[in-house]
Amino acid sequence: MQSWAVVCWVLVVLVGADECPDGGRCQEGGTCCSSPADGFRCCPFDQAECCEDHVHCCPADTSCHTATSSCVNATVSIPWAERVSAERPSVSKSFRMIRSSMDEDSENACPDLSRCPAEFSCLKALTKFGCCPVAKGISCSDGIHCCPEGHQCSIDSRSCVKKEFESTVLCNDGVSECPNGMTCCETADGKWGCCPMPKAVCCDDKEHCCAEGTTCDTKNMKCISTSTKEQLPMWAKFPARRRADWERQKGNDVPCNETAACPDGYTCCKTKDGGWGCCHHKEAVCCKDFEHCCPKGTTCNLPKKSCDDDLGSVPWVEKVPTIPRKDVQLQVKDVPCDGTTGCPDGTTCCKTQQGGWACCPLTEAVCCEDHLHCCPKGQKCNLAAQTCDDGLLSVPLAKKIPSIPRKDVQLQVKDVPCDPTHACPDGNTCCKNTADIWACCPLPEAVCCSDRIHCCPKGYTCTGQGSCLQNSKLNWHNWNLFFADKKKTQTL
Image (cartoon, rainbow, N blue to C red; front, top):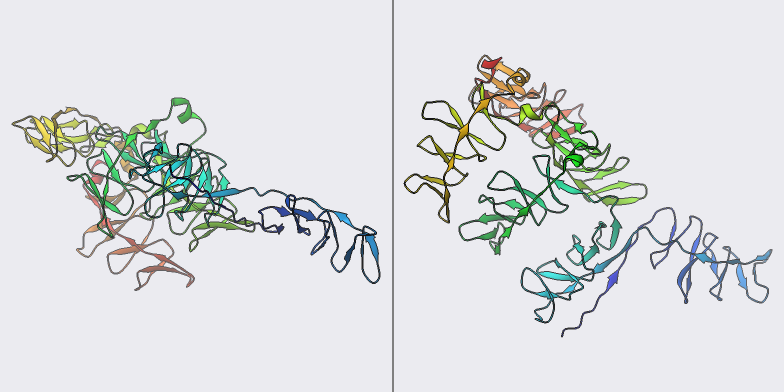
């Protein structure tokens, strides 16, 4: 049986107090004094003299006089002071992970078939897997340390900060959720599943997922690294948890625009594509990278990927997708087939034998040539066998259902008309592209750049360096145009 050694490390950063080597601290104006019995204690004097009895101390520029229990110098003699206990820090030590082994006697198996002791948790380390000496741990970014569940690692991975709340990852339907640190991926039935890793790649088979920085090879059931071409096993998703009605009704959603919102207690922040994301902080600071945010009263530190204030730094937060606004949810969730007909959310419009519309109960489905059936995205209709094939497996054809009248027709008046036959979504600006065709800038009242490829926010000027300039002070990356919808304004 292999023996296990655990080494603990700690690094505490505190401002406005005297920091002791063991992680404790003394009040501002105090001094840490070593004590063989109990580590460090505090002397109530700045730059104090620590007495040899390890119990008392004296002010600076004086000496401890043990015989008289006093502090003396050439002019004064005052009673010495007794030391007091140091305050313990608000953060706890992080644990250094130990190497996992191939010992068959160990009870906790890792995904790579290495093992950890039963009371340890198996976590992803720098190269393979390591053992964290807590039953439920989280791996720190350095791949060497770990923290208990319910904590987050400090920027340097040496300390564990207890979370104020246990957050979850909200999926795009606004109802399903996954545990924090995981990724929402859509399933074949139009619902949502959870991939057990952050920023995961959702595979086209809608059953598996791969780690960030890899691509899915569904034919061979492998994840291929984009940098090293290393082949890794695919991960299976598990069903996402659907929030109960009482959970969805509590609090008031924070509206971002006419259709998107964030949960109560979140903050709306713009994304790179001009849309909206949600920051898991109230009155948060939206970072200029359009991907992260920080708590109120802190500043985004882009190079360090942290949120800074006068007391220290905490990790910044990645934004999550918005949810449909409850007050317009029934209108915006229909899938439009034409100007008057639509299908329910999560379905696909397919033509009928009569030239009308029907609905396939799958997202982004393939409409079969018989105008009666349909297949999941990425599969082909096999009408002879009445199946949907993708080279790996076959599933039965799905029957289409009748379409419904569109509920969102009245929302089309919010479109931005470019001409009688072209329009852009609300909050966009019409710009001509290089082919002299209407395109859309994802910003309201935007400035169309002369290259007919980019655009800039209102009040900015396009530069030849691919950026937007305002008052010769602030530079922003400009935005790419996308094609405007044809005939969208005919329903006005």
